[in-house]
Image (cartoon, rainbow, N blue to C red):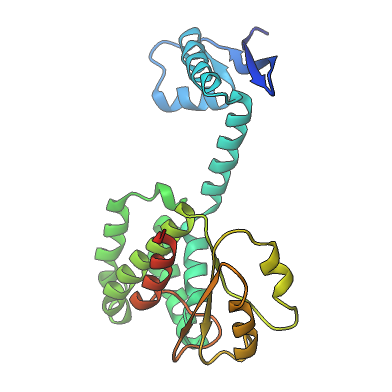
Length: 253
């Protein structure tokens, strides 16, 4: 079987090393091939001459930047797999777990999601959910489940926006936001190993992160802390004031 290969050289530590990038196998596209069918063929490793040339141009651009195209393809595949695994159901389960609600309330909310939302977007990765589909779910919810669902629509919109804001900050910034969970282990070995700024958030009512442990953590270089009044061990970061604490920490110089 014919295969498309791109031979290139990369300079590593002053030495040029030759490598080969496997673009894929030779394939012919049938007349009038639909784009969706063409995508499936390329995903299976089959490329026409024109498509192989396009892939070679992309690989050349990476080599000019000192990037091995094979390594980049592997990283892209890992990233896609992670995004595909982040379905709406997984995000909804995480969101519900973070709520400081009674179990009966959580069960009611989860039941509403299963009845109204999940039938349409449960298995879709979050990044692939079009805004029109979200609006359709929100607008049809009162008709399908009057009462609690209708009154919860505005709160769901607000919570979803706040959750996305926190996730964007987590993905764009490197400083560590730390929740020290429990006192069975001393925090010093962990803090001593960290080389970036650390923010410790403690709920003032926490009986797990004790005040003396919290004070000891703040003595370490590069560690700052915020104590949130009226909150138990783990702040939910769904409140605007709590989100502002993290935002200001991540955006400061």
